Image (spheres, rainbow, N blue to C red):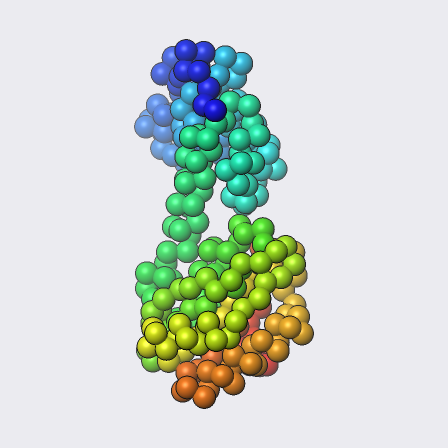
Length: 233
């Protein structure tokens, strides 16, 4: 439930030195701390804490790390007293915009030249998932991205991907190339035996319909692993 606005302490009532909006106007966004930026999103506090104080509590919940903060759900954000559904949604939306901005470059260019190009996009897209997500990227003969499709989502330790779903979508997209990807929330980038078997199965199936499996990339906060770069594709 959202706090009672009669007991709130809106930013407009603060002293001028404590107003993050005015600070942003006068000094630019880069001059604001993470908590001050969050306070602008929160807008008002409650009878006990200002918006900045609530923002500092949120940062603590995210271990004072924006990457960790991005992994928190709307429900988890509401653990902070004074952060209701509306404020939690606003924060989550802002974090999602940040993720999309980070991953926008390669997707908007829509041309894949190296494993590093695609890994950068995929890491930004998948790094905040606390469970494994398996995706496929479909390319045309010029290596332009046709579509990005989430194939499956799993638990903390794994997910399953149906080769038939992946190849059916490739035909529907008119793709000539596929890049597979999944994340490892644990941070470990080493492919499992199951990862290797699935990769070979999809490679063989794709070859039968004249589609090339170009790579299978594993991403985590630690970096990425490319089957193609390692020479085992």
